Image 1 (tube, rainbow, N blue to C red):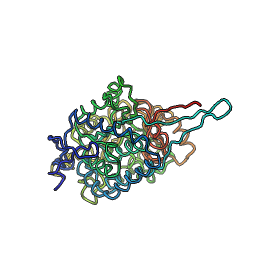
Image 2 (cartoon, rainbow, N blue to C red):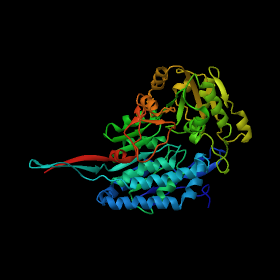
Image 3 (cartoon, rainbow, N blue to C red):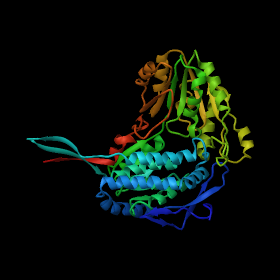
Image 4 (tube, helix red, strand yellow):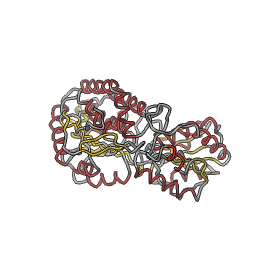
Length: 477
C-alpha cells in the first residue's frame, strides 16, 4: 500500500500505535496529500514517557561500548533503507532527491550517527593523592524530549536522538506536524535495533510540544526551531527545571572584503544562502559587500543563481524545491514586498512566472536577490527563512562589522577574503556561535555548534554536545 493510504503510526515502547485519528501531511510541491500520520493525544504522550522511563532503568546500565555498537547498527539500518527514507522526505518536505536534497540528508544522517557513535565520556580523575581521590562522572539525565522542525526532519532528529541514546538516556521524539512521516519511519527502523522504549515517537500539533515541555516525566528538552517557540519552551519548562538545549533562529551575516575575486566566490555565496531553498537556520541571510566589488559580486551571484533549476523534487534534474508550507511562503512574500520599494530587485521577486510554470500548485517562490537595502529594512532585520537574499553595500570594514552585529540573533556568520589572517581577525569580532571563512553554514559533527544572544544556548555535536545530555556527579573517596 502507498503512504497515502497506509497511515504512519506512533512508535511507543517498540510498537506501532494507531490512535484512531489521523492528520494529513501535504506535499508542498503540489499540495496533494503525501501521507497520513496518527494523531497523538495527551494519553499517548503519557504512555510514551512512561515507556521511556521504564526503559531508562535498564538502558542507563548498558555499557557504553554496547550503546556505541547500537548506534552503529542504527547507521547501517538507515543506510539500508536510505532510498525509501529519501522518497518519503521529498514527498513531505519538498526538497529534491538529488543535489543537497533528500539523498544528501539521509547520507548525512548515516555519517553523523557513525561519528557520534565514536564519542566517549570516560570518568575523569580530578585528584588522586594522599588527600583523597576525586572523580567526575557523567550521568544520563533520564527521558529526553526531542522537538524537531520541518526543514531537515531526518538529520535534525539524528542530531537530537543519537547523542541522547549514546549517553544512556531514552527519548520521546515529536516531529513537526508538517513533516512527521520520515521521522516516524526513521524511529520505526531504530526500534529494529534498540530495546523497547528507548526511542519513542509521537506526532501531533503544536500543543503536543507544549505538553512535552511541561511534562514532569521528561528531564531535558532539546529543540530546534524559532526564537519565539524557544522562549515559550523556557517558560513551560521552568516549573520542572528541565535541562534545555535550544538551537533557535539565525539571521546570519556574511562580510565580503574588497580583495575577493567575485567570480570565484559566487558559488559559495549562493549555496551558503540558498541551500534547502534558504530554509536553514545557519544559512547566509544578510550579505554585506564592499563598495569596490559590490556591483561585480551582485552580477556574478545573479548569473550563478540563474543556472539553478527549481521544481518538484522527484524530477532528477531539480536542485531546489518549494517553500515547505503556506505560512512560511506568506512570510517570505511579505518580506520581499516590503523590500521591493526600497531596494533593487536583481532576480526574482515576482512569484507569478514560477507559479504559472508549476500550474498554480505548490509553494514555489523564485530565487530572489535584492540589492541596495540597509539595516532597518525588514528583509535585513528579520530572518526570511526562504530563497531570498538581501545585499547591503558598505565602504568601511568597521561599518560592516557593526551592521553585522546589529541583530538580536547570533547563530553563524562568514567572512570572504583572499587574506585569511585578516578574515580571521574580523571573524573574531563577529557576535555569533560559528564563523566560516570563504564558505558558510558548513557544519560538521566534530565541531560544536550553537548560537549566542537570542539564537539559543547550549551546543550540539562533538564531545561538547554529548555532555549536554548528562548531569555531573562528583565522587569523593
